[in-house]
Length: 269
Image 1: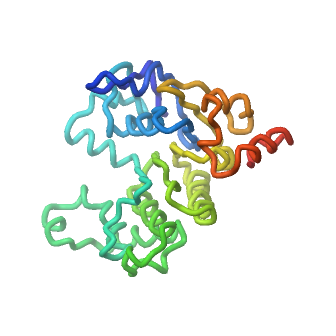
Image 2: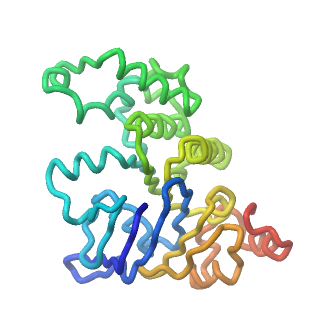
Image 3: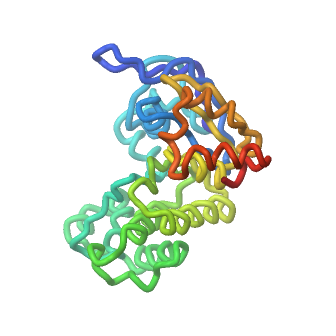
């Protein structure tokens, strides 16, 4: 379980990124965090794995006070939490499988780190992870020969190789076309359902968030203004989250979103 208790994040220049955050996220939930750019979405998820340190309140993951971890404790803690970025963060001039094998480096003995020699077990795990996201056939192809969607699936396979309990995804489909975005989101949904891995995703596209997530957390100016089931989201709630600027958060025209709510559809837009 992830628990935010009166969490605050304030930067050195005085900017308040998060305030009064109180949330509990159970293991196995699929949560989409939505809101305007600069609302605090990325900051919220990056506090979970200590990419950002909170400046007030308490943040617990399975009973562990994250802010009290130091050095090796942080590194061990992060092994349980996969992170997916918009920019993929891959080494494009090498093969797909080598990018996945990188996930094992923190646990390797020094001589393996220096030589880059991985065990048979590691290679099998890497191939299994690629199979889970449907790109096993690309294992020995250079990353720069893949499409953007395929590269994001490599990043997801690399995360799965860690055997995480939680996956944090920061705008994972922002640079992908609609068709490819659906393929990647289907991967996230299947992994969440089949492996009981918690997925907490910062996502810009409202209609995709409503289609795939079970739970929506709406952030506005660093505060949670909505927290509930995706199926219960209304147009009025979205107007509250986005301050009447919903069109900035959708790849579909705002009129289409409005029509779908009028027709009674909230989960599939």
